Image (tube, rainbow, N blue to C red):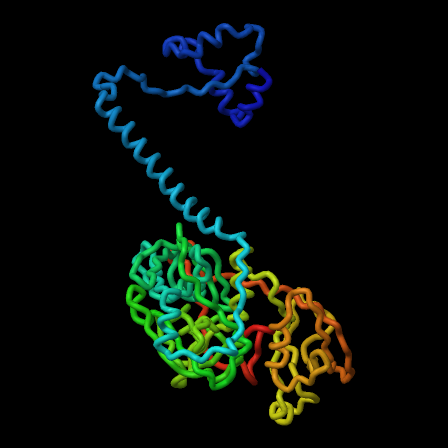
Length: 460
């Protein structure tokens, strides 16, 4: 009773008095259902302790006369529809899980190829002979999705069971891409994405249920010389067409350029025509050895007869890790942003030395809180830094965990030497599993030379 009274304390004393003073016969005449309960209450309770009752208005619920139970046919229809929905959901989930498990199952393999030395006792072949030797190892790739987005590219057969090396950018504008691969004889295969890397612009696909393909012979790109004759083989117009061939020479064996993903890379420059659709194709020496993976995205747009290919030395290192681990794990970085100070810049801007002017230092860098903004790195491994390519080349030849030495002219006028441990530069791929969720790195292709501020050791 105490609890009941506490819940009704909101009633004012005035309202209580009005109800208490009402004639008892009024309750009896209205046959209020609560009256029987009130009569059962102890008569010794005073009127002041009597609980306050509010009359409840309600409408009696009558029997539903027009109700009809669900018919047998309707029950069967509902059961069938529920089964269809369940099966559709299960099938869709299984499909996507299956595609995911298929691509994931191809990661973890150890694929180690040898880069063949350039023959010393063999004459060079003609372009026709080179084409004949490499044609079966170059494929067309059609990239598409359920939204109707599509592009064509090329690829090179990496292993006889169907690993294909190509470019990472070929699917950068196509969310949730699927892949069809067309071999030299027009045979069509389904392929799955294995892994990709934006820094090197390399990617790996796998032909499902593939076996006994003709593997390309990969040569050592370190043995290339300027002026050496080469051909480019790919599918520039249509992935389903036969591969085409263009001829040229090696313009530069090692040219550092800024790629479309804003990273700098040491690439092979050639005057062989490399057009859209040829991305991922083969740059081949006149012994029939693939020495580079071509990329139309790296081709110069301001100048004629300038194309680029990723050296096989880089390809081997990256592709082996993509297949084994799904990403590149041992690539090195210093972890700073900088501005190159060459002799002209130093004279005009009145800098105290030539080298790399530090703009900022990342918290994950080994030189964090050791050097800072305004300091100038003047030497790497004892070598004077006259341009940033010198340091970039050193970094590119190292692995994460390696140590290099730096000499730094501090902003306060002092000089210091540091032994620096390089950190891992692990990039992601342009691949997206969601339609419409695109990762489309874009930037004009140009030399990563003097001027500008660069995220070391990669682009702006």
